[in-house]
Length: 321
View: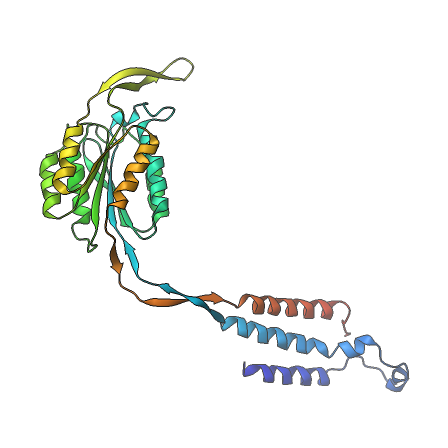
């Protein structure tokens, strides 16, 4: 701002030193009197100075403080979701969609409803893999979830391996509340770790496992290819389930077992998991004030004055030479 007076002095001196019109008999023009343009012409340098002043104020980034105070402490739960991607998740007992499609939709809504909970994603079929580590970036997590497909991993249902992989993601977590949510529709028939051994690991780490059995069980519609017109052919197929195993896992680790036979019951199961958990602080903080940016009017004023000066100098107040 200290440069603005110098800019103003330079503009005044530059205007005084520049001849608007060279004429040998200036007294002839003097008798004609002054018009409106004569009085407006000295305003041009001031418009530029005011534009620079407003721009400097905008660059200083003025702010106003909100009267309300925000708590900067972030509370949340560390959650790892183990999602079954075996081919049995293609069963159509949730028609018109299959089990996996419904599970992904409900999980996406679940992720959207969270604010400060760190969520990770483990997928499994014949083997288990970490698809997304614990994160607060829900946008990336939902995009990863959207791209999940069956028949990508070796087929099977490795429940024990999926639990062990999930526990490994939570082992070093400092959150007071850590939990694994297992979503599957079948019985353990693959993997290197027995499900109850994984449950014992969870118990020693004090991590509850909440199990959700997806599907109605028994004979369910299962896709058997397509017909001549490209329509999916469904056939009643027996898909084995083991609700007793999932109940034992939940009971041993201090979690709970739920059965989801439709999208609404799956959504309720996930909500009950959250309702039963204690929140913990992930980051310690204090009370901080909210600030609102107020530079926008000054920036608009700077552009407006500069544009007005340029417009007048090029049209109504244009001088020669």
